[in-house]
Image (tube, rainbow, N blue to C red; front, top):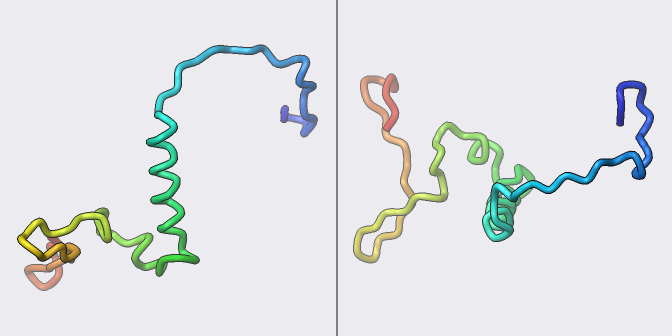
Amino acid sequence: MNGDGVRPDIEDAIPVAYPAIVSREQFARVASTRASRNPLVMASHVAAGTTLLTRLARCGGAGCMGGFTIATGKGGRYAY
């Protein structure tokens, strides 16, 4: 739409070729991850939390595969 809220006619469009910046597979993978983090599916405090790798990073120890958590130090001043 243009500034006055009127949609231009499709005949006025100018076709432009441009390369894709992400592959279809990568797009699908990210879309799936985003859908799984939907606040209607996942608790919003987890989806919008400060821990970037929540539910993504796992322990590589033999047979562990536990999820990483936050630990704090110095009375909560540092999170790691």
